[in-house]
Length: 155
Image (cartoon, rainbow, N blue to C red):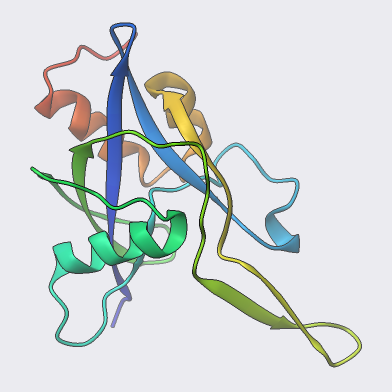
């Protein structure tokens, strides 16, 4: 059975242009990876948990942002490895202070564990740049947002 995640795509308008908020995974494996490695803040749905509540919990844990609705349902996509990602969008802003409360631990070569934040960078990007940075399966979520907001896509 595929894993199921939920996340939020925060957006804002800046000088008449649509920008979306993305996060970059932390840890040594992702240190020098950029294009195609960013994501919406998202996480796995716990048993019995509401999909939207999962998305709200995850953005708070990964960034410190407390989202406020209304929320625009963007549906779900299937990532390359089979994970199902449910997504909602909301209009918001960010102070620039990343407060990641979720950590990952991996074994090091010496047998000890290294601990690092699940997210190490975040930011708003113009949609065309965001479409290059985001996991390519999630690009469709940005396009759905543009459609819902009736923003013409760049050619």
